[in-house]
Image (cartoon, rainbow, N blue to C red; front, side, top):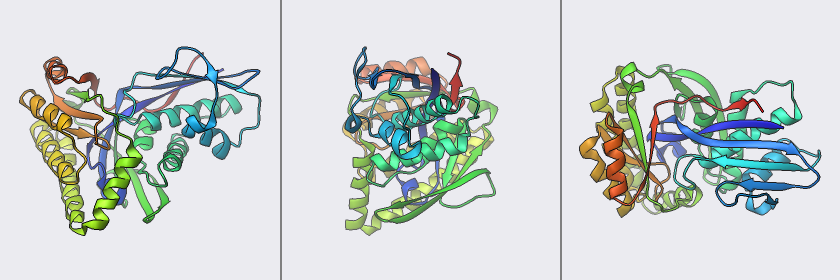
Length: 332
């Protein structure tokens, strides 16, 4: 048996703009996905999202897993029993599919190469390729890199000497080749001691649909590319505030980023309402992830009060500290 865990992520600044080479900042959160693999007589899968017992494994219903098993590992061994446990909201912008891909990649590596060590950079690339395969060729490496590496990650279109460079990656998308550099930053103590509160609207937000929708709107209205550049400027200001431990400035950047994402057409009335109601108890609040539903996030020193506001709005809260550790193997 092999067991691996990978955390979800929360984007603080830069979602959607990162697909077009602008920087984005994300942090790993406490919640995530665990995958247990064991050899069996027949293929079976149990996913805590949908069932409490093993069911027949179906390739078309598990695209990320199928891609990793067949296209990445070229696995031809005995059938597997795949047990997936998650405490992330599904299709909510918290990187659940990337966490699943990373946990699956780590567990399958351990099962097939018991003595081999997990390379977190290679794991992030595996997760990214699985995301792209499931999203019609469009995916930034933000979710997979943050889930694999942990901490606070900056994804940019080019290497930046202001941040610690970790690795580079690229992807051929329908709009052409995209390139990214992955960096990490150390969080100021004041930031590490604050809280993130995620609020799930209950509305699913398929990332692929939202990314392709933005691509379509950009094609029809090229002026929207100016909003992408504005998000980049906000992201850089937010990064500086993170490094200095200026919670108020981080919050201002979060608020500004949300307004730009509204212009891109990815917010919803439910998200806007939850963002508005939580700002009075937060340094800042915004949607996080693809939008179109999913989650918002608030930076706060009073997580319980923010969680109450989310519940009053009809949402489901999730409280997390900043920058959890990345993917890892668990002892069986």
